[in-house]
Image (cartoon, rainbow, N blue to C red; front, side, top):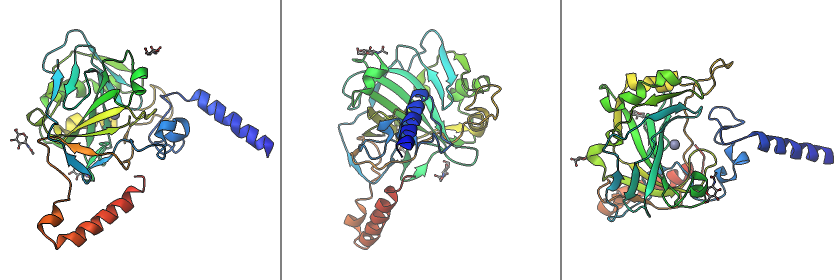
Length: 321
Ligand SMILES: *[C@@H]1O[C@H](CO)[C@@H](O)[C@H](O)[C@H]1NC(C)=O
Ligand SMILES: *[C@@H]1O[C@H](CO)[C@@H](O)[C@H](O)[C@H]1NC(C)=O
Ligand SMILES: *[C@@H]1O[C@H](CO)[C@@H](O)[C@H](O)[C@H]1NC(C)=O
Ligand SMILES: [Zn+2]
C-alpha cells in the first residue's frame, strides 16, 4: 500500500515535471479539456466561478454604459512584419506593437499582442462561446495585456489582467477579402512549430465593422491552460463571414503534430467545453438582449414554458459539455 502510494507520488511528480503549458490537447483523454485540471489547478471546474467559455443568453443584464471600445491603431497598417505560427493547439498571429484596446468599460489600456482561432471540423462547428446554445463554425480571439503589467505572467495574476475580444466566424458563399492574408498563409504552417511572415494589415477589417457597439461582456478565464481567471471578455454579437475555401485549410490543413511525426494528427475541435457562469453577463448598450425574461411579462401562457425551459437549462448546465 505504501509502495503503491510512493509510486503514485513519483508518477505524479514525473508528470508534473514533464508537462508544460504546451502539453495539453483536445482529443485524448489523458490531456483533453476534462483532464486539464489535473495538471493546471485553475482549469479545475470546482475551484471558482469564472470559467470560460460560456453560453451567452439567459443570464444577461443590460449595461447602458457599455459603449463601443476604442481600438487604437486597428485602422492603420503597422510597419514591419507579423508572424503566423502553428502552435500545435491553434494558429496564432503575433501582431507586434502599436495596437491597443480601451474604453467600453475596461479598467485601463490594454496592449494587443496576438490573435488566434478555434475551430471544429468539416462537419462540426467549433466556436468556444455559444449564443443561445448555437455554436458558430469558428471563433477568433484578439488578446491584449493590461499596459500596467510588464509581461503575461504578471497579467495572469490580475483578475482583469487580460482583455480578449471574441469574434464569431460564420460561413458564406463569398470570399472575405480581408481574411485572405491569413487563409493564404495556412498552407505554409501545416505542421506544429512552422511559421510564416505576414505583411501587416488594418486589424479592424477582421472585425464586424458595422456592429462594433453590439457586444457582451463578462469576467472569465483563459480557455486554454493555465486557465487563469484573468480575462475581461468582449464577445461581439455579430459574426464575420468567410467562405468554405477560406475555412477548409483550418479544419483539414493544420496538424497538431510536427512535420514527419507518426502518426500525424489533424488539429480539429480545438475548443473547450461550455461552463456554467455565476457572474453576470452584460449586454452593451446596443446589443440585442438575449435574455428570455420578458417572455412571461407579455404573455402569461408562456410562463410555465419558461419555467420548464429554465429547469431544463439548469439541469443541462450542471453537466459538462
Ligand atoms: C453550425 O453553424 C451553422 C452555420 O452558421 C449553423 O447554421 C448551424 O446551426 C450551427 N450548428 C449548431 C449545432 O450550432
Ligand atoms: C514579469 O514581471 C514581474 C513583475 O514585474 C517580474 O517579477 C517577473 O520577473 C517578470 N517575468 C518575466 C518572465 O519576465
Ligand atoms: C448592424 O449595424 C447596422 C448599422 O448600425 C444596423 O443597421 C444593423 O441593424 C445591425 N445589425 C444587427 C443584426 O443588429
Ligand atoms: Zn482562444
